[in-house]
Image 1 (cartoon, helix red, strand yellow):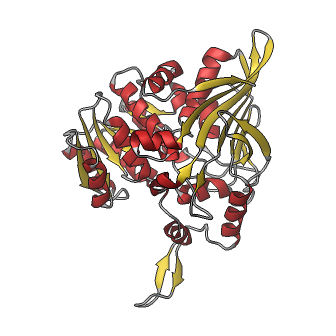
Image 2 (cartoon, helix red, strand yellow; image 1 turned 120 degrees about the vertical axis):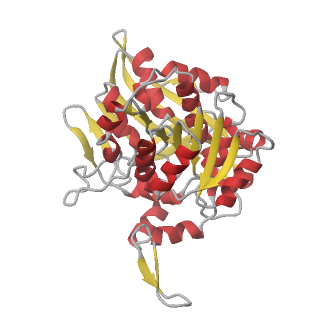
Image 3 (cartoon, rainbow, N blue to C red; image 1 turned 30 degrees about the horizontal axis):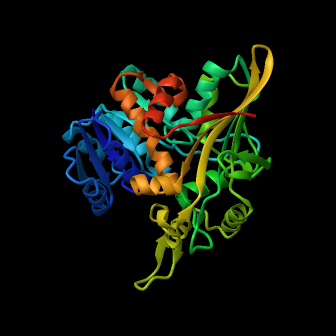
Length: 405
């Protein structure tokens, strides 16, 4: 397998460090808008000749397609933010390559009833092209990070091996991470965090389908394992709610994020001030008016999450809570994956959140490369058998767990 990795930020760099320990691929081209960043990721790997750095603009479909063709890449791995999903998705199809991402095409709220009805849903633009991918016999594996991604694998595993009937699947994400020296320092991309937290959350119910609620709705306290403890979780827009019901039979599907009260209040303030907007506003500059995106300014004012590992302490947990029946009796479980920042920094030099996101697409790539996972069309993680993925994740040195609730 020959891979084009687009994006050499925190997650992209972690992908290279994880992949470098595995033999399943022939070459990985690491491309970024900032060539120096791509070169730094490759240089850190030493003399592994399978990796090389390139510069590419992820928004330039023709340039990406040409890069895929020049390096004879079999698959494009998208490690950029969601703004670039569609140009990279289209470039892969144009070049005849496969495609894998960790976040799906962006949503747009319903123009009249944003907190009741879905407008354009996450992934709609990609699923609209599913027939073209299927006809070509090509695979676009979408939403294959940690959340979405591993959380979806957990949902498929629960349906296949733990339950006869499922009432509810609820992804629950929480952490007890702290960052020394900062009053506010998100452990993941603030651009993406604002997008998913301030958009109308989506809920799925059998018989009703997908519908929306207000941001931060239905707060609940969830007890996370391995010493993380209780964290308040709220509804957030996320791909799992759009993916799981396509392949797993469940009466209700939700996603709740353990943000904490301070984080929620900060996001609400950004929204009230209009600093979550992506459209340009005009501000004075030294050479005249300049158009800037308020959200990009917020991101520029905050530290790069990939650089915070040495200051971070604690653990992050991604998991899927499932309620239903087995052999006629009620059952409730939480399938989870915990990463300790001290371990990920010592082992890979990557902070816990980006490492946890990065390991899953590498596992998926290996399954695709070896033919264990195969298919055509636009498919989510739930479309494939879960056990091989979970076994390989453990073989990577990152075990998962199941807790009876």
